[in-house]
Length: 111
Length: 114
Image (cartoon, rainbow over all chains, first blue to last red):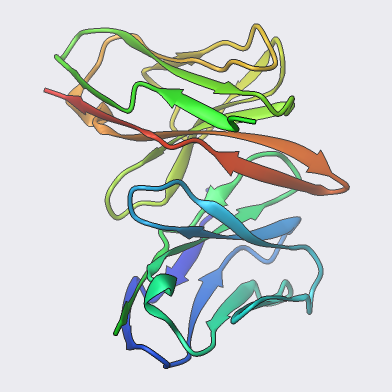
């Protein structure tokens, strides 16, 4: 059974702080790594899809990097704002349509 | 486009009852999936479909049936509800762009089995 792990499980930061979280996944049979943002009482929304070792993606204050050889991806948020409060999920795929999700990192940004 | 819709939003069942969770998408996506989300666990794949008439099991298929008679609809059937099936259920649809599947989620159905 393939495992995707995310750390930390939860995080509280002050407004304006920068933060980062980790997603670890199997380094063999890698196909793609997805990041989702999931606000309470809503459904997950796609942030990034990453496929190549060394990929870096950026959307506003949020960016992500990918290391497929060692099996990890980092998500960074620069200058956190209260509206960034959400659960951030990563999901790994190994060449099929089946996604394997991590348990998520719950971020709370305090004003 | 309505995107991915799910009904009902909330449901309470008694142990042993059966029901169908509905999922529909209007984006002409080939791929559709059902996930369940439990506290402390990630989204776990129950069943998925790669096109009308084609379904397959995911990680936790026991106690659930699916069918895909049209591209738009992918209902999930609970045959005999058990308290262990208390969860939030998400349906998702996806299209393939190059080697990437872009996945869109419905709003979820919160199911309680007593």
